[in-house]
Length: 126
Image 1 (cartoon, one colour):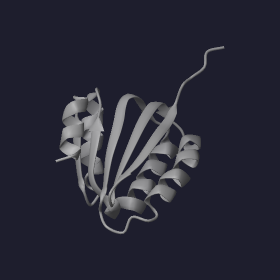
Image 2 (cartoon, one colour):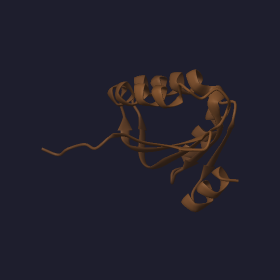
Image 3 (tube, one colour):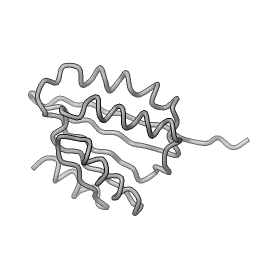
Image 4 (tube, one colour):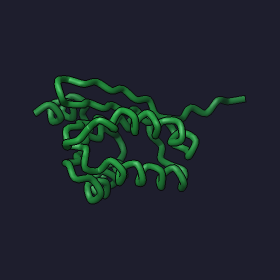
C-alpha cells in the first residue's frame, strides 16, 4: 500500500508586535486538512488587531485542493483578510501565480508570487 502524503505544516513566530506565519502545503489538500489546521490559525491570529501578519506559503509540493478544501481555504482567507500585511507564495507551478493574483482580490494586504525562496523572504521583511 502506498501512503499518499498531504496536509499543511504551520509555523508561527512573534517578533515584537509582528506575527510571522509560515505554511507548507503538501499534496492535494482535503477538507480534513483544513479541519485540523484552521483552529490553529484561528488561535494564532485571534490576538492580532492590526494588519501585522506576514505569511510565507511554500507551495512547491502542493498539487491542489479537493473542491471542499478550496472552499475552506477561501473561508479562512475571508475570515482573517484584514490581519495580513503581506503574503508571499513561493511555488514552482504556473497555476500558483494565478492563484496568488486571485487571492489578492480577497485579502486586504499584498499578495505576491515568487519562484525563489530568498526573494519571497526578502520581500516579506522589507
